[in-house]
Length: 461
Image 1: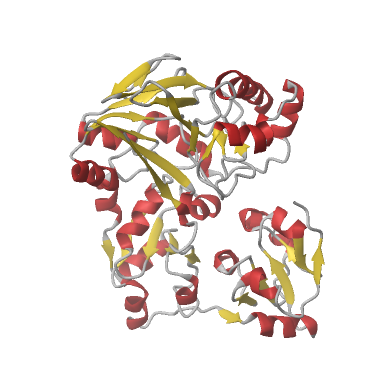
Image 2: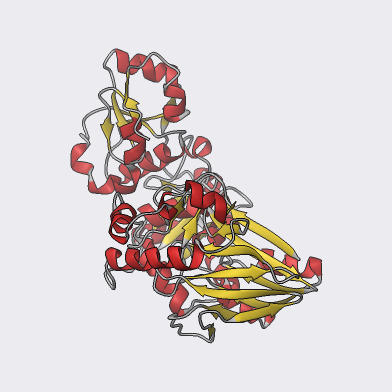
């Protein structure tokens, strides 16, 4: 028996490959099928099933394309309704894969159809539980993603029953393999590890502590921040189906000339520049939004860009297809094409460009101490509450465009996040709204802390 966790850091997402006697299953695959098909070819294995723990909201799954390519059966748990062919398993239904078995455990709470898959080894012993978004390391899936179809309290109540009657009753040595790790917006505060055991989670996970149903509901529903706006659309895409990813890649990587890009801009397209911030700052098409491929690209695209707005991509040479694939992972397929030759072709054509000034943390400290700049902190609320520069204005990136009235267009702002990735996204967004007196701080708050700037420390954990 082989179990392989296929972890994708930019989405904090884990898919799983399980194989026994040359037969395989894949759980919660990402949109692109190539890595899975390559793994199957390398191992000479036959894919029998594609298991889906639920209708994912934070990414578009590759289950449909993978089933088309291999003939495998798509399997959901109870209560899943799909617009395409799939097997909707009964609670307790078992599937044989070589010498192992996988049992469906219906565990509603994150969503009504959420299910876990319990793997029995060759000796018939419970070995591992693939928990989807029901149970994470140190957390559980948020119960507020059904867009009003059920209240978060109702779903939290279901989750209480699922955890206490289906999961906590399993042996302590059963491995826990969740669908997400730290950084995912599918939980409130997911731990740093990407796997655990039932016993460890019973000792350390607040949601598995002994408490009443009422206490559980209050804890799980408290402190939830609004999910990224693309979540609801992605869940519907996963439920209703989508265009084959190979067709999306072919269509969306269409090379565009400089003149064609200018035409798309006049028609209302958004320029998405996927180069790293350190390169973007040196020159870019005016009005571009910079979300670099070197960070949580798809998450921030889905958070700050309208899914309905057509996109033109400016990418580093050789990164065009990667940009398109990572957009498709979160359902962004309204792409007009990619600027042929990248920004260099724009510059060579003599078109106007823009730049961003960046300064060292030490220079930042000097400007703040002498009062020549104001501070704009775009980290998340919890980060800011824990510690921040004294006197800083706080506008979290995920809600930045709804707080523009708090930012004075006439003031000079030194903008920072934790490490420098989000601050460039923020600056590029603000520039599209006429804010140009902005300076980026290299290294962000992590480096600012090492300077003489006065801090406010609250140390909220």
